Amino acid sequence: MRHQNKTVKLGRSQAHRDALLANQVCSLIIHQRIRTTLAKAKAARPLAEKMLTLGKKGTLHARRTAAAYLHQPSAVKKLFEEIAPRSATRAGGYTRIVKLGPRKSDSAPMAVLEWVDTAPVEAASEPAGEAKPKPAKKPAAKKAAPEKDAE
Image (cartoon, rainbow, N blue to C red; front, side, top):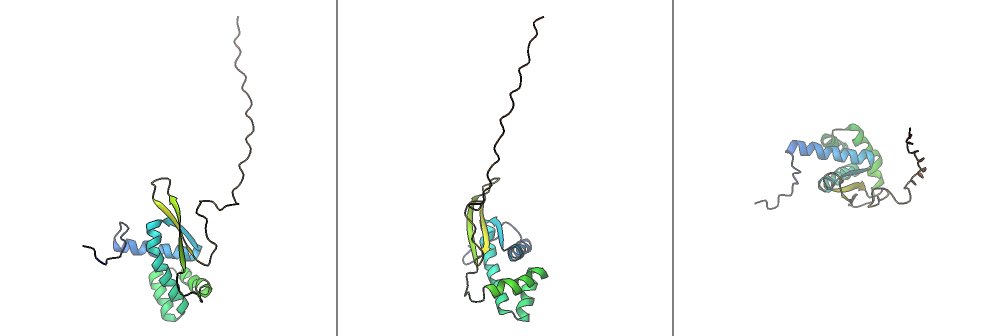
């Protein structure tokens, strides 16, 4: 029985799962928002919040702990210098998950994982008001029917 085993396995080995989640958190730090499956977003969320808590501490030990987990110095630098100071007054709940609906290819439920202090994403795939109008189609020239010569 799996009582109190809360690890979401995501169909991967432990090493693959750890690498996947670390890369998801690095992408979230660098791009501020990631589009992924709902299960991966729910698995990456606690880790992203723990990394932000380390960023808020700002100590050398916290920086080294984050670097040991994330493996990307540029992501650690951005976390400690840009993202953590933005959330200094917030007591928790640094991320938000917005459900997007099923993916077209395999109907996997998709979601956006983003920092709370960024502008929220709309539930639709395109933000409202920014949809580009489709160009008007030109009427196709009628093709002349081949004339039959009665000779």
